[in-house]
Image 1 (spheres, rainbow, N blue to C red):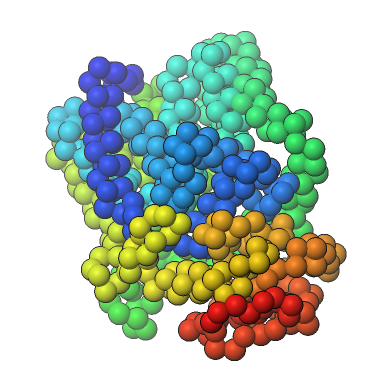
Image 2 (cartoon, rainbow, N blue to C red; image 1 turned 135 degrees about the vertical axis):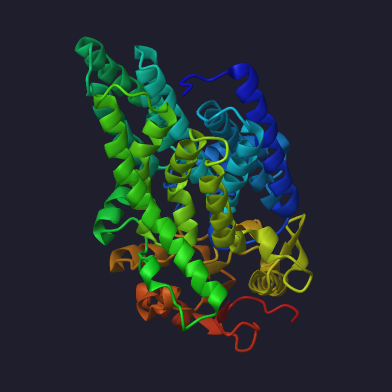
Length: 522
């Protein structure tokens, strides 16, 4: 089994196949679908960075790296629209897909390699949803490739490079830093088995730590140059400990809980398939670790890509199970998928298809419904709309939200005063080119009275012309309605703004106008 990359052949094939799939998928769905929720959260943050604000300090945000990357690309392109955001993401997608396809091609049986690489590319591409999470998906793939390169040739330089990559991706998401560190510890244990040069191993650890510090320098620079950022970062970490979770949990859809007899057969089988994929992240992670360590002990050759996947699978499974739905599974499953494809690729030309083809078919069956291109198949599903200069096809829910916001801006936005939306529509600000009057833009969690009082003070200072509260029980939980997670703010709105009955066709929209705002035309 080959353990080194043939750059001249494997990389070229991977480049062609990878770019082809990225282009085809983007052509299919690049202008399909739109969400004011999670996608809007990213879009708004990028816009604010382009206006000179600092993530986490000035507005609720992910870690800063993804905003500065996107803002840089969008600044070069001269656009701040949603399509420009998607271009920045597709660049990352290609940058992740091509190297991992090269690794898969190098680690597999050469007979029929082109066909097999095509199946691998399709399998991986169908899991690259949701679109606004391509940062997380691409980072997980990149981490596997870097760990594989380190395992292939554990020189001091590669120890340093692996540490630097782990430190750098932590600037894009602290969870990736933690997952990368845990996977790296696994690689260190693997390299320690039957180690023949302990001096080099310890020297490598020192290089890894130095590399991690160097990779994390962008965060240190942000702390240094942005007064108040460090305290805001610490507060955001403290909040995770306060709520004792990294996400709003959902019940784990184990395969034996598939809803046979209560939903249609197709939906029940999709439940079963997703449940099997959830189970696979744990089963593969545990068994692969045992396997690669056994091979190391017995001096058996094993693909570096498989070693990397073995130690990354369990850490990334945490992300999948933190909020156990298909979208979060997609962000945590890539080490498992790549590992299975690596194992399949080492088998004979025929038998590997008995693994890879069913995996590909099951992936398409489970994940295709999440793709906006599929969701907008047929004119009856999505309407063509102008979203800040971009022509997109959007579903009925997004269409109603956009039309409501545009109408509110026409009726009450002529004064130039800001507006306020809560709890789940941060993209409203990006859509209308506005700044949120509050720090929090995605209010899914319970907040303390002190926090709410600070936000109320910001609202008083901003004097918004209108307010939209999306009154729905998130995940079907009444305790997650806005009036229950933010009771003081909800009461402030009711006491100081006039409710407009029947303004929206969506009964979940509670629309208010400032008592002193000019009504304008309606």
